[in-house]
Image 1 (cartoon, helix red, strand yellow):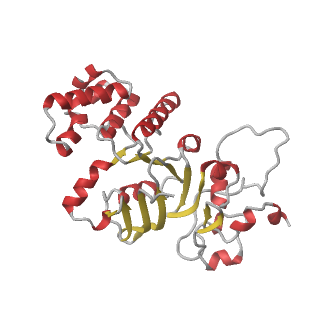
Image 2: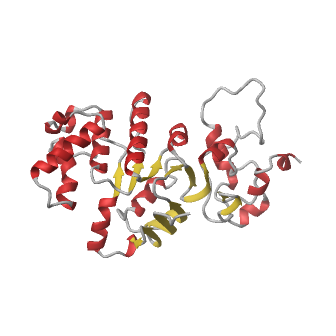
Image 3: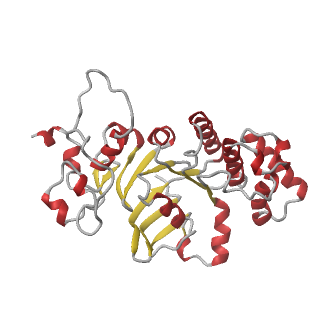
Length: 323
């Protein structure tokens, strides 16, 4: 397997005395989409901003194409930013209301490709607007003249006009109607295939994550609790928190469906303590006395499947939990 495009190791973020992210480790390969899921406040967006060095972590390392982003001098970090782009949750708020759409999309070219002529920039802007499903004539309009879905297409155009290697989508479709979400997701998939870029897709919408992701990372209270291939995770989640997340998704079960594991209806997604032991133990239906004293490390429970649970090997074999 080729070397990862992005390597995150031991990432820790603190806000004063508040520990927001701790001991986060993951890889992201070129052309791959990794979904990052968890409740609000789990630390997903904080991880994204730390990776992009929009905030400074307390410790850890972030390597992008072999470059240590967290310790790069300003000039080197600035050069890397053309390959590191982000799409935010609120499409209208992420656009400057005083700039035309054309100027907003052209701005990255002014910064990273100053040798381009004004004509070449206009041609690139027109081409990327058409590619994201908007007309070239819309370059002269302002953000307030567009709907939320159109503004998100403009944000995607701005983020991909330089063909970045990594695109971070921070709740990029959560504020859009369901029908528009599907269009935006399909657009991202098409652009990924054309440009070969990797995507870190942050969302609490598990259906969208399942559609777009190759692998999924689950976070709880600032810590990774499960990492697995997408279909494997949705078919048979290992960590009790992941199972609780999936059980919260509304669906109509088959008449003859029987739960593979003890039901989690009583399992609340809120709560937990980071002081000692497993942060999820107070809400976990299969917790052991060990969970109160020893924090479970993120270990490989099966090939390609990682979980931070003392009973991960048992949850892979549900019958053992019924004995």
